[in-house]
Figure 1 (cartoon, rainbow, N blue to C red):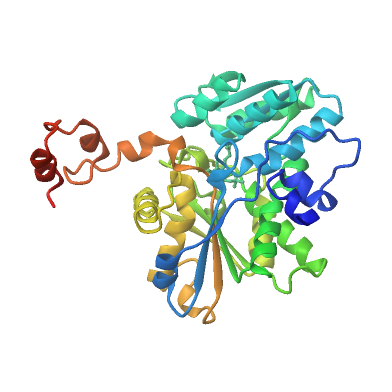
Figure 2 (figure 1 turned 90 degrees about the vertical axis):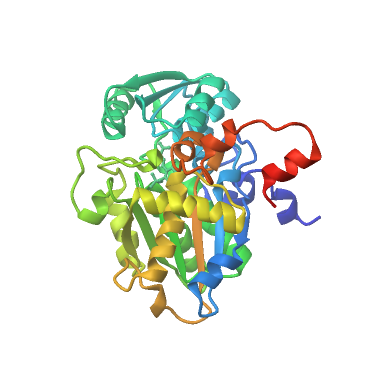
Amino acid sequence: MGAAATKQGRGVIARYREFLPVSDATPLVSLGEGDTPLIFSPRLSEHVGGGCEVFVKYEGLNPTGSFKDRGMTVAVSKAVERGARALICASTGNTSASAAAYAARAGIECAVILPAGKIARGKLLQAFVYGAKIVTIDGNFDEALRIVRELGDAGEFVIVNSINPDRIAGQKTAAFEIVDLLGDAPDVHMLPVGNAGNITAYWAGYREFYSGKKAETLPAMVGFQASGAAPIYHNRTIDNPETIASAIRIGNPASWKQARAAIEESRGAIGIVSDEEILAAQTWLARNEGIFVEPASAASIAGLLKCCEKDNAAFALRKIREGSRIVCTVTGHGLKDPDAIGCKIDSPRDGFAVANNRDVVEPKIDSVRRALGF
Ligand code: F0G
C-alpha cells in the first residue's frame, strides 16, 4: 500500500497534514473523520440534463454524522496542544454533538449552549451520551453564540464554533477530497448555509488547491438558506429565524462577510428554499438516490432542483456548459432528526406515523400479500 492509501481513513489531519496548522507538537485527536463518499447521482444528473454529472458529498458518514468532525479534529487537537481544559460552543445541534465526541476522545470537558426546544432529538442525545454539560437557553442560536463569545473571551473555555479558525482549516479538507477524486474542482458547488463557516471553508480549500496547482479551475459557490432564515440572501439580520431545518435556523451568521466574498469571487450565488421544498427534496433524495440526509442538508438538493426548474432561480443551471460537474454537499445524516420526517406527511399512503402504527397483520403469507397490495 502507498503512503497516501495508508493515510486514507485515518482522519483529515493524517491525510492533509501539510495544509493544516499542525506540527509534531500537536497531539492528534481524531475519530477517523473525512474520506466521505462522493456519490455519483444518476437521477439528479438526468434532472439537470445537458450531459451534466451531479455528485453528492455525503458528510453524514463522518463519525458523529456531520461535516463538523473535519473542523473539530483540528480545533480540538490545537486546543489540547495549547493546554485547554474545557471546550465550549453554541450550536443548532451538530457542532455540539461533534465537540462533545472529540472532547470525550481528548479527555477534556465540553459545555454546549443550545436554543431550547430547537435541537433535533438525535443531536441532543449525542451531546448527552458523549458526556457534555448541556445548557439550554430561552433564546436562539445567535443569542447562544453571543454568550459563548463572552465566556470564551473571559478565558474559561476554548470556543470551538467556526469562529475558531482551526475549524475552518479542518473543514477545507472536504474540498481537497473532491479535487483529489475528480482530478479537478467541479464547475459548480452547492451547499446549505447557516452560520456560513462551511461555504467559507470550501472556498478556502478550493482556492488553496488552485494556487498550489492541484486544481486547474475553481467552482462557482452556490449557497442555499431556508427562506425563513435567510439573512445573507436578504442582506439583513433576521431577529426570529424560523425553519424546519433547525440546523440552519440562524439569523446573524458569524462568517457572513466571508460567505459573501466566496459567492462574489467565485461568481456563484445565494438562494433560498422553502421548508416545503426542503422536505420534498429530502424525500426525493432518499427515494431516488438512496441517500438519507437531515432537512438542512437537503437544502442543497432543493436548491439544485429549483435551479433546474426556474429561469429566475439563484443560479440558472440551464445556462451552464454541457457536461458540467456539479457537487452538492449534504452535511448531516438523516437519522439525526427523525421528527422532521415524522411530522411531515400524514397522508395514509406515505405517512411515517401511519407506517409505524399500521394495523398489525396475521403472520400468514396471504395476509402479508394483501397488506403489501402487490
Ligand atoms: N447543515 C448542517 C447539518 C448543519 O448542522 C449546519 C450548521 C449547516 C448545514 C450550515 O453550515 O453553519 O457552516 O453554514 N450547523 C451549526 C451547528 C450551526 O451548530 O451545528 P454553516
